[in-house]
Image (cartoon, rainbow, N blue to C red; front, side):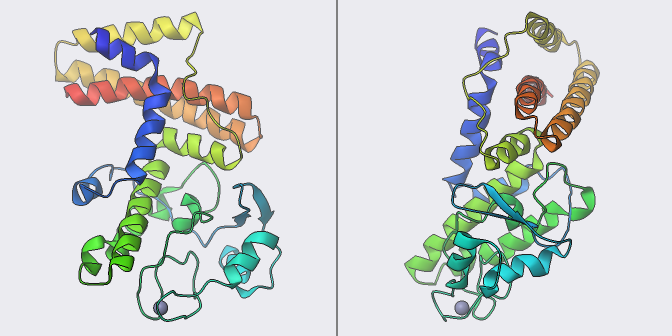
Length: 280
Ligand SMILES: [Zn+2]
């Protein structure tokens, strides 16, 4: 019980740690693929935004997201640093130029390309850079499609260089999918793209919330049966959804302090939810 409470009070660091470690591991790849497949999501054209090296948004395009993003590859575009970099992008194997963005796999020879960290997680899935991801974007389908092209097993007989690229790219796509598929980690991530970091060690000091969380935790520990746990879980998910909506609104209005406050609350409810999942 003590251990569980301790975890509850420092949830942000754990959440961020999880996000980080996923990106650096490729072991357990198949198991990873099977997890977190609950939410289906979107499809839209390619991203409307580009980022410079500091991950700051530097340009928006017109509504024709695909062609505008593609323009950055043609060298005629608006975005200075990144686009000139992109114009030099060529397949390391066959020297072909990219036909689509993002350039994770060469369309000409199907060779897996090295990770390009200037491509953010939204861009990997061809998503507009906004917090809400509508269901018709089919995030899960896009994720699986990438893994069909990037899975390390596909290149087991290829040179070591490509095997390394496959391991890195597929791990990054897993990380991207998990990050965007979860309302809390997506909130933390999109704030980070705006240059706003959520303090990993920061905890909520409002006595009211702390008391509420303590009460919920006790209810979880004392829940007599499955049904009782499910009810608490449903209430946590509702709270998470409400704070996620508040985050979306704060983020749209560039009220980043307010957005961070929403994240802190979501973190606590998310932690309780995880505790419940373990007990179910
Ligand atoms: Zn190629």
